[in-house]
Image (cartoon, rainbow, N blue to C red; front, side, top):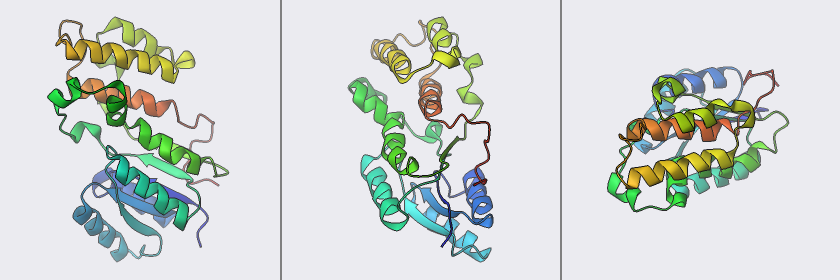
Length: 218
């Protein structure tokens, strides 16, 4: 029985798959997740070919689907009893946004879109670990240099005082302008970039901020 347990989202290819490989190679039990079950199982088989069959399992996960989030949490609780490492690698930018549905949604609907429930569901399992880690994999799309909307740049740049309430305040303003078709006139980035940026800030609020940032150290 290994001593540490990890979940990697968006892990059927590329960086996510390699993160799974590296973690398992270092003795970490890895739950490889992907939206597409067929692709996820194919990725699992690749790792098995590398002799990692005892340290990697697959579980289907759509980070925007509450039912698959709950299923994953139940699986982790039943099989391992806790979670030590969460690697948020799934790219929200690759998801097609239904703009009409989003305009008709409430703030709660948008929070599901921004992955907050995913983190909240897994957080209790992480808190059972002696050394929990959340690792957020982001692209350059999450940089504030691409945002010219001065008010939210000011709030997001103040990292020491950034809170979930402040991010929610930006979300409320963003949704108001989005529903009124004012994103361009108010200097917001285009829709998917705005979502990626705010989602990254939500995740960062739950990051481990200790000096030891290694996800392999006990």
